[in-house]
Amino acid sequence: MKEVIVELGERSYPILIGSGLLSERELIRSLIPARQVMVVTNETVGPLYSAQLCDHIKDREIREVRLPDGEAYKTLASFETLMSALLEARFERGCCIVALGGGVIGDLAGFAAACYQRGVEFVQMPTTLLAQVDSSVGGKTAVNHPLGKNMIGAFHQPRAVIADLDTLRTLPSLELSAGLAEIIKYGLIDDGEFFVWLESNLERVMAGDVEATTFAVERSCRDKARIVALDEREGGVRALLNLGHTFGHGIEHALGYGEWLHGEAVAAGMCMAARMSARLGLMSPTDARRAETLIARAGLPTSAPTGITPADMLAAMQLDKKNRGGRIRLVLMRSCGDSFLTDDYPVEVLMETLGATESPAGG
Ligand SMILES: NC(=O)c1ccc[n+]([C@@H]2O[C@H](COP(=O)([O-])OP(=O)(O)OC[C@H]3O[C@@H](n4cnc5c(N)ncnc54)[C@H](O)[C@@H]3O)[C@@H](O)[C@H]2O)c1
Ligand SMILES: [Zn+2]
Image (cartoon, rainbow, N blue to C red; front, side, top):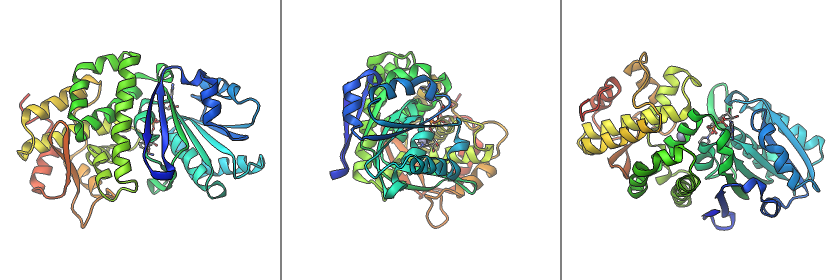
């Protein structure tokens, strides 16, 4: 088992990563000491893993809420369902909410934990690769509103994150690829050594090799935790975590949310950021090609889907909440492992990038 500490002063907490953690009774009991425990999960993950978890703490007062599966349920209505369940069970300030599932469950249960009685304990048990390397790290919680994704939320750090890699064995392969997009992102942002490791080991992770997956998840959590510790509330460097995301949100918005997985849109977005960086002469065409090749090997798209126009994408990118003064802020790269935030580029180059499916490296 590997441990990554997210360093946030008195709110610091461990992320535990390994195979078989869900069967470690003493570990689970020590990380969830509360007398009253609410397990939040969904109709896909609950039947697979909830009984095993609850058996370890069966001497406690346990309530489980099993929501329908999907982003469509990351809503204020589901939030109210959780609040009602907590109140009906007369759960006290000392209770603990456990999120058992992917990022949807983590974000929703985390937001419930931030709000119930002005904040209760929260433990994350992420069961998707994306949740293990991204959404469970950093303390952002939220629900969606019909007028905007993740627009209602809070920062609320968990007490611990328990990432059992065995749960990934039941995950559909496209969901695994979506998590790989965020893993590759950490390499591209500022961890060139990790990017090179992924170039040699990606297929081992895709095949479920425990040693390789443990390393990839641990390294990703370390990379994200380091950035979060520097900038918990996204005033500066945390914005680098949006590499590929401004383009990706453009794709998701222009295509319609839910058509592509978020990770697929981010993958294509990172390739667009690489090609734009190469067009601007910031990144070598060889490095842009390396980024695209690794992303393609992960089973992910390298360009926007046909049918959405550059104008559609630009309009969607202009809505990004990270923009300042009307200019679209982008994370661009100098190499595979060196990125920076900028809004200082000729708009024509952005338009060329949105219009082009070909890499400037040719082919
Ligand atoms: N808080 C953050 O910092 C942050 C960061 C990134 C993403 N997010 C949020 O995370 C969400 C996306 O998370 P996600 O990609 O995990 O999606 P998800 O939670 O919808 O899970 C994807 C699918 O996999 C299923 N699933 C989960 N674990 C499984 C398992 N072990 N076996 C079989 N099926 C399983 C789920 O039921 C779902 O159908 C979005 O709502 C996004 O906004 C939050
Ligand atoms: Zn993302």
